[in-house]
Length: 337
Image 1 (spheres, helix red, strand yellow):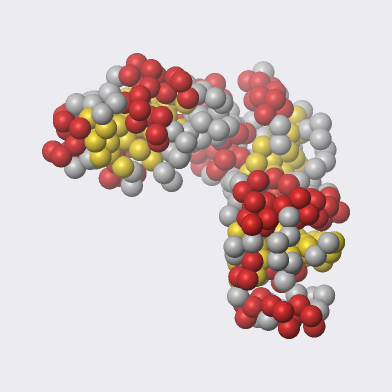
Image 2 (image 1 turned 135 degrees about the vertical axis):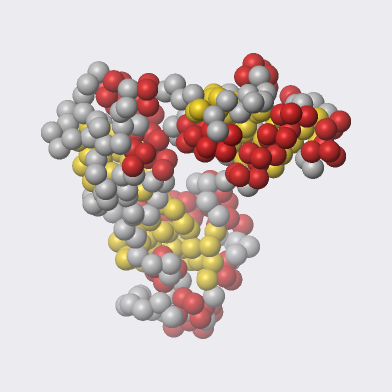
């Protein structure tokens, strides 16, 4: 987790150092304190915040909450994209989640910080205050994509009105269901990789791997089109894709790299030897074997990290694609109850 801690006084920097060490974070202070605090220095808090905001998963401000609020105000968008932000007073008495309490993990981070400082996490989100299941927080803990933000808000509002959730899952969930989750719940929430039902909140595990092969110079549009077609054949939501894999010969393929960037993933590649070591029956090609050293790229790449094929090789215009899926691990933890 990419965490930054900012402090503004000598006392704050001392506490900030403790917090940073506990979190594996980077401590940052004004230049005048940097050397003594063994911290990175900044000239302007506004400039520093603007610089770390796009790459931070969490930011901790040690000092007055108002300072933190003014620093982050120009950058706040929504809880699904903002980093977690926590404000801690210089005495460490209160750790206050200011932003992205559930999805970004600020509530959980505040509790970790309070454990370090001996203080209290001042969590104020409604589901937490009322001791209810927080669907967006649980989705984030289990690496599940949320299908529709407005539906997620409606489900949370329903919980606060006393309406329970009935989880309809394609896989078992370990642990005991927390308060707000019941077999006869009025609100249906689906845990699935599928695109249906579109009118219900779906929590989507990122457990699908796309395996892709292509000719040299294949365009992004060709790769994107076939990849989406392969997913559509199994009714799989694009947000279920957690990896895109290919052979190492394609590690610099511009169109393939652009496709990965377009869905927020990096490209994972395997050697021909690794691909050929994968057990199973695949659509073998002597031409591909002579050209790449592996008799099949897309199917073998899709299952190279584990999982089973759900759509076999499809080919068009010098591009091949297949997809596989692993079983996601879903858990209700003590903190969810």
